[in-house]
Image (cartoon, rainbow, N blue to C red; front, side, top):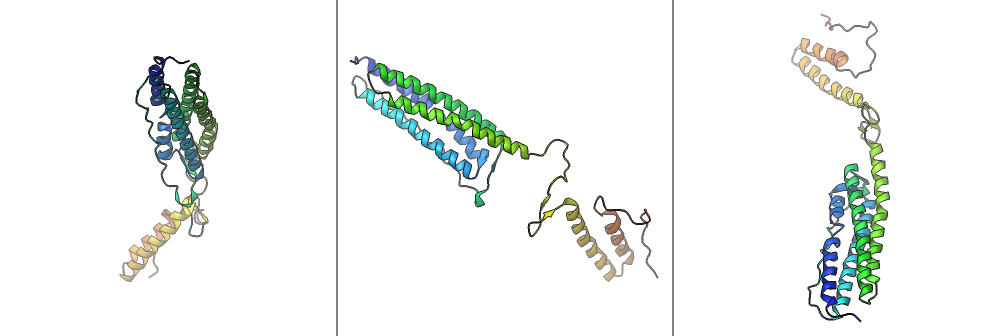
Length: 247
């Protein structure tokens, strides 16, 4: 039979465990909300974390109520705040993330998981000493095991994103520069070429309209020779000469 004088100490212990370990996922929630992961995977992880957070809150509250029902204590019940809400998902189901934040998320999940497993074991042992069921302690421990199990998946996603980062010394022109109007890849040189044609054509046309033929000649020369994309073969003569207007 539990002595009444044991109850106040047990209530204080449960409150301390709840206050220390109840918010164990807070930093992980913040890192996830700050963009560590986006898309359906982030939503699924957040939902799983929120579910375990709620389970831990319930377990500590239930354990406290069971002990207080034994009599001999009026210690206030512990309070564990709700988790930080997840931002709305990105439009179009975009999937991505930030490798550095994912690394931080992995660390936070590992720490929270170990903390809950330890707290669950301590809570179960306390309840057993008082002759009560150890279910709340097991519930906290199981939540910790689930959180710890997510570390591998987070690390896998981090490694996948790291592979997509440009490697040191990689050329700027490697891969697709962008997407054209109809989804076709657009290389940097083609972008420069198109812009050069438009700009110099406008200058040439305006100069000729105003009778400034030398300026128009200069625009043609710059477009054909100076602003041509890198890699275009030189003229057949191998040299570039200033154009002469026929009189």
